[in-house]
Image (cartoon, rainbow, N blue to C red; front, side, top):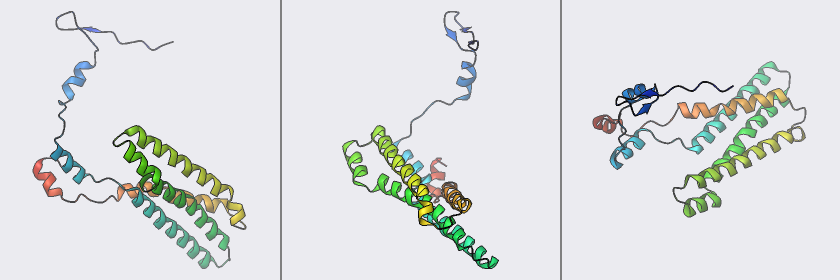
Length: 193
């Protein structure tokens, strides 16, 4: 059974119908005012875009960190389970390498250059390129995970998953530790802050 539809409320003149929540929306919303080119430039300056290469760099840094922490733990324990270090490092590589391939494909590949030249400013072309490289990334991750037992003797799946998950969390870290705006004083003087 379909949910009941709200009833139209009679307008001020008695001929125009309005939904009951229209007045709340109209009263709360300020009138839309498009930005001027200068205001848009200042807004972009205040809110710099996050580079995909910055995310890949954070992923590589976390891959090194989690591998080093695992190696120190194995060394301190003295039990010689170095396969854990290899498993964690390979799991981290399963996140870093496909992300680097996708970043290259989205920014530097011949396909990316062709799409931006053939369809400048067309969102569908950007989406098609993103979907293509995301598919390549997923297939590469699956291939790397499937071949893990062949490359790492005595593979620890738990170690592999730990390395993979820690590196995947770098997306949040790269977003939180974004580059600061270049000139906040200009933005605050113009009221764009």
